[in-house]
Length: 252
Image (cartoon, rainbow, N blue to C red):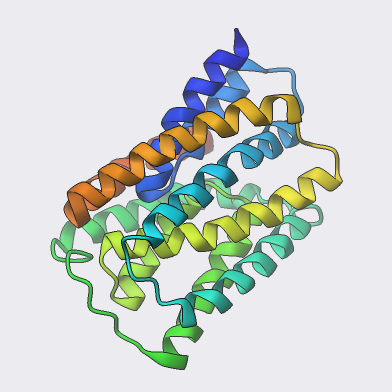
């Protein structure tokens, strides 16, 4: 019955991930609960093997309805891939434990800033154009890509927040761009996990199908209800991340 439990978790994770990121908040704990004796790297690799398909499907659906600044996002995708691979390599040499206590504090700042700036992300007004926009997007991709490979929790939410805060995107457009960069970071991590033999491919297929189904529903809801809906889900996901990462860092 474990496969049914984790497949349902993957469905819900795909739904949340398609709207604003943070699907790992649901699927990874479910996998650790279902397979407590499994190596963590194997569960992380299997999670990536499912989520990358849902994220890809979501990005494709968004791209049909939302204008994407490809001139800026394309180089940022490549930089995100390199950053994630470098982060995954770095974690083999440097402990990521210090981030465990820092992360909930950073997320509290993100949540507080979003709540205080009530108009932030409600209107799409890009601050940069041309090369400047591409450089800014690449910097976001490099930093958060490295973070995703090195540690990971909240990657999608950080992408969205920085696209809104630094580039002036609204939450819907930021979510679309975040998806594209998140695909690159997921693929980089998946390649590394596959090379190390840390993917359960017999679970990857049902998890991927469930994740794609949830992703399609989440994308539909985001496009139907717009920026205000995405902002609300963002606040809920960041709040849940604060509780989860805070518990892991200070109470466990």
